Image (cartoon, rainbow, N blue to C red; front, side, top):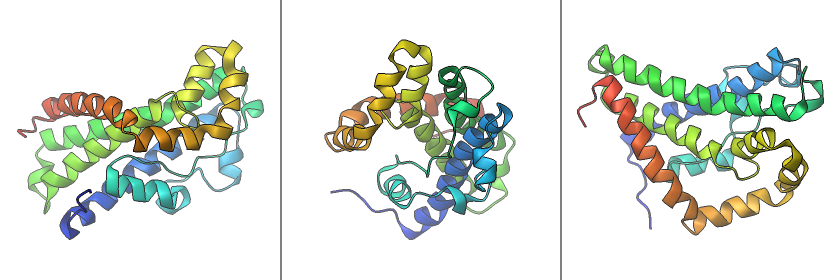
Length: 206
């Protein structure tokens, strides 16, 4: 069994999730666009409008289990003005990097005392930190179709065809790893460590 969030927590959790998902996917599209692939722009995905990026199942997973995913921004590697595998490595890194920057911004806002100026500001900023760290680390896992698999393909281009070929079975593998607890055993220690660093940066006392 798992504990459903209270209405107050849900009201604070939703904006934290929307911020994390939106900046993650926007960063993918922005880097791809800068590298020459305008697919995301042409399909209306180069936007900070969260509605364009929400995957219902991934959103629900984030609400209930604190890890999930958004609707992937479309990228055509062959449009990139560089080696496709290396280009996809950069595009894939952009999403987790954006989440870590958003978490850093939330920590710095806490340091500046913003949490004292808005109702439930302390909980909201902590949720923004936690959700964005979860999104960053979860997506860095080298399991198709997560960003980590494309980063791995960029680092080992000789294996790129095999890695991308695994995306056919990626969601099945991912769900099995999630529901057997294997991903959780890897994810949560890393998340807690990184969140602890951000709390130190922000001076969060708990």
